[in-house]
Image (cartoon, rainbow, N blue to C red; front, side):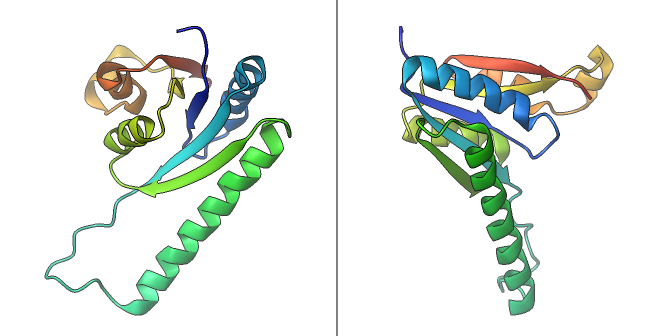
Length: 148
């Protein structure tokens, strides 16, 4: 593969988002790529019974999702060059599976993710999204080390 027409950056709203976006912008300029900025929101918890819950709770969650999407749009606007086409995506679901499903749907050529530097024991005991993506992804990935 000699080009990356679709680049996806998976973000989780931490302080390192700028680092990931700088890599995405640089590569997008070089390859004239489209950049997709994806944040996967936590799935709704399973409620006892079949009712979706009180309306006010659904309204609060909907407003939280709208605010997160606005934040993603601002990230695109602030970190991606104006000549690069960028799109913000906020999708609810299981993180690893959702990232991989969206990457397939959007024909992503490169996935950019941040990786935290943790000890072997920490990684052994805790789920690491970046490592799970590395194990399961069938597309090229760029992992960017993130300082904690």
